[in-house]
Length: 457
Image 1 (cartoon, rainbow, N blue to C red):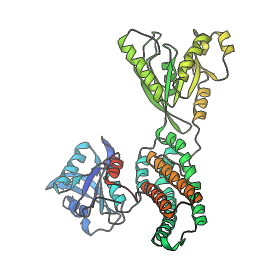
Image 2: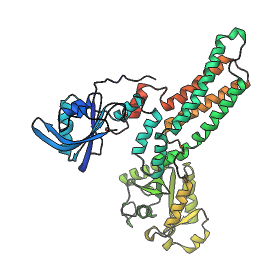
Image 3: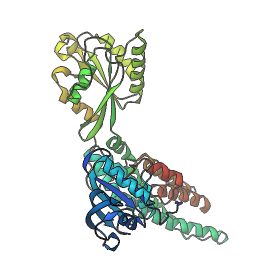
Image 4: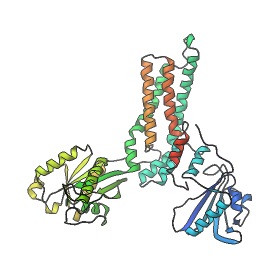
């Protein structure tokens, strides 16, 4: 693993709580000299002589000028998040106070932290592996309880521990096969092929459920984009407002009112659904409406689900069939929604199949039925403590490649290929497993991962 060297005298500072006015704010420092540097501007007990995990009330001062009364928390290495000396300054949440304290620390030779640098330091200093570090960001951004629990499970290391254990077993066999290559002329077999097969099948039996769990994990982490589409005045904006339980979109009898994509998020069944109201689909000469219709088609292609509305008050079976033919071409999952049930043509309603959900969005008639149908299409089991669900695309790709490499090892043994080819595929498997935990990585990969973190994390 290639890592950038950490300078012992390189101390960083950042606001660890959200920007804006609040009752309190926390400013975090990390680095070998952070306690001494904070002491320079702290009026109270001598921080350099205090024990780890202690709190101290005092003033932050710029010379003789007090900036704020604060509580300073001390975390001495290696018993801190970054495994370095750390200080957390809890001050009042005025932006002026926060700016003043950070500016004062910069004068002491501290530098501003880069995005995710605290967690990056924790990883580089062996606090946890890369998969656990990524789970920190997932936990911060979790928008529902399933996402929170999935991130927490990964952060606590169950997934990483099993990956490391399997990798160690595979390394043992790889070393034996490499040893065989050194004695090629003597026709010896240090790695028992039957035992190697058993190990590979054991690893695959663990990897395959994880690979399959990614579909569920992706829904848990990223939510489901749902496009509400249909002809103008089909009731799309009314349905969006009903789902959100607020007047989010303008509702009008005038066709073409919605000319851009309007979206908002709702949690249903523990899943975040991002509903998008779109411009009505029709041929038009209005240049702006044409752009709206084009954006509707683009959104439909990218969606995980389309709720296609048919106005039951003025739609024919022929029009329904024609519109459904167009939806099918998109190759996107869809639900047929019969809207304006309260104004519906009774003979049309009687001929519609069970695959239709009939609603009157204005009065919220059958709205709960629609929600149940939507959730059923993306049903995820509740994530419990200890469950491992793959939510990270990088992990999914590494697991998939690992499984493919192991399959080639099994195929090679069945065909009695030489040890050097087996060793090559085993090395590939070890490489992909190592990418997950950070045993195999690069500076570019680390920079890309941690650049997506908050500045103070």
